[in-house]
Image 1 (tube, helix red, strand yellow):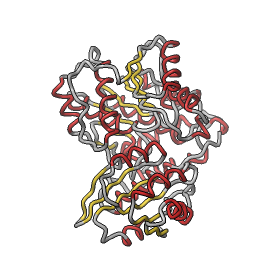
Image 2 (cartoon, one colour):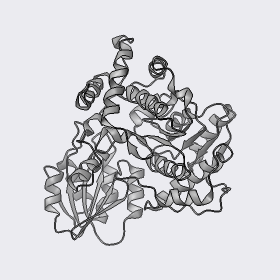
Image 3 (cartoon, helix red, strand yellow):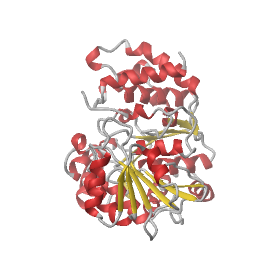
Length: 418
């Protein structure tokens, strides 16, 4: 099997939609020899900041000399971003080989229980991390936590970044319901670390932790390290993510000792593209940020400097995009709305109407695509590109900052068919 054939096979698995439950991934993992029992994990759930927190934890433990696996989603450009070791993407050859190996196991499932793409990729990652003898795996949930395929592992620590409204159609329409899904990663006797602050959310997390006899640490409590949560990632919210990473390292200090200087090195050198990422091209400065829900837009708005930047934005139609437009509209002098390369995209003209209604002084234009928006804004000194992570991935490609790979953003598409 070639890499291209493996990618096409994964595309074919999208017909099975998304499956919320653990029976199928457990069976698939068992057929693969239960690789999850041979690894150590830090399991990370939450609404926003999961990827950044995972990147910080990975960087800290890598600085300490460990061989660290990193499993995240979605990918920005290349599918291979999802599975990394010491920040090296899995090779095309290994993707092809692992897909071919798992194809045999898929024959053991009846059509109505066929594993989804995410379930297959989850087990692929587990097999790869075992083969590569990882000392630790930073393991990000896909959606929710309780019924997410990643929840077949028993980690050293469970991390819940925060709880906000997103994916309500699957996770619930209240913060308490969403928190219950995220808190589903809490395991018996496994310590929990969270940066959540809302009383109703904390009540759910605390109850779940008590029920599992799991020690709960909130990052408002003092760390055992005399360190400020300083990181190379920009944005005030990244300080909170850094504090969460620090607290997690502190909780695990007896099991995995890390010197303070290594923690400093890890935080100082962390890299996580597409989240308040600055790119200079000629005389222009671009700020790329995948602010794809209201809480993400709040963080972006707090990070923007004064003045009136040019805004390029594309959002998915199944997001609560109207309040996001209202929040960002007053900050920009020019606004270019674009469609996202997804069947779920919000209409660029509808976005433009919402922006114009929220800020009639701004110049608002709907563009055919991101390339057209970049051309229209080529003389603007500071351009903010935000919205869907699909759009951020496309921007990284067009600006020449994409990772290795031909661009497989379509593999991020999914729907809850089962």
